[in-house]
Image 1 (tube, rainbow, N blue to C red):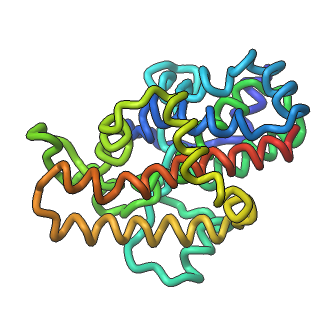
Image 2: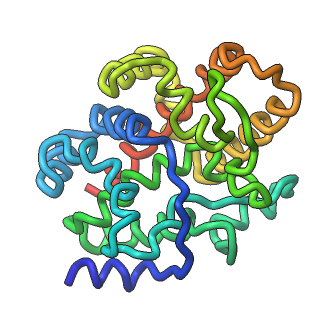
Amino acid sequence: MKRITLLLFISVVFVTNLFAWGAQGHRIVAAVAYDNLTCKARHHVDKVLGTRGIIYYSTWPDDIKSDTIYPTSGDWHYQDLDANMSDSALMATLTHYPTKGGNLFRVTDSLINVLQHDNTQQDALKFIVHFVADRFCPMHIAHMDDHGGNRVKMKWFSQNTNLHSVWDAKIIEYNKYSYSEYATYLEDTFGDEKKEIKKLSREDELRYNYQLVDSIYQYHQTWSGNTYHYAYHWSYLMNRQLYMAGIKLAVLLNSLY
């Protein structure tokens, strides 16, 4: 019954096979969030999903894409946008949801609505843990005309791949930390920014992420093809995105629980 209720809140009709962050990235974001929950919120979240369940279930929305449990959930993971959008047009996508390019913004708001009415809804919580992270994955608010970087081909240590996959997983995997080591590293590196990150509005987040996407595309146009240079150039900002996602997820869960 609860699954049916959730589907009534979230009704979409398009399916795709795009992924975000990869398993490691989602676990890192969830681990940062878990460490920044209030005692009350942590108790309630653990009650719904089990101890550290937000970490263990953080990849569940990707895992179920091949199942029929939520057959239309594929395009909930991203919101591709046009290039060169004005600030006002960009901000409008947060409330006047685009009719194409994905449903990340609309579905995230719908899930928050679900949890505000029933914060014991397990599937809604699993989805929100995943989708808050997706909002900070640059290629999940990337350009519509190349399917979020999926059509931008490149090589990563001589292997054929694309821009989307590099930002989903390959830069993260390059650093060779476990998710728990990575979360600790992010806390140590970016902890001084926590208060400012908590204050960011949705508009601030989207504006910053959209500008970061533009920088990624511009860099790719002049990139020499050296993978070491690419990883060195982008690792810091990639890591900051992961940390920001974890802190903003914690802020949301603290407000819900």
